[in-house]
Length: 55
Image (cartoon, rainbow, N blue to C red; front, side, top):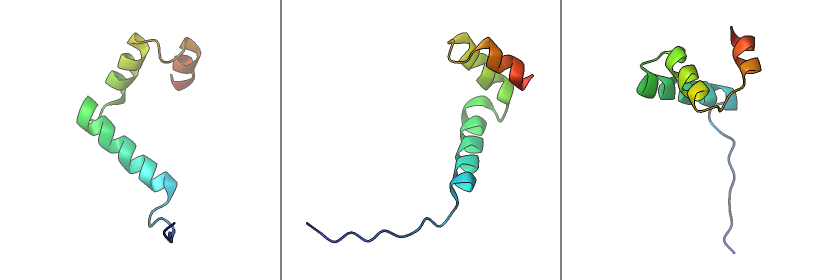
């Protein structure tokens, strides 16, 4: 078995998630949330309750 050295991440989980999410929405939905939510809604991946919460 090889020795494995773990180092702490250079960015926080929150910063990483924010950057990746923003990039994804920019690439696939022209930076707009509405098309993302519409797409999820059309495929029934989100509930009506969730849609009301974000309204």
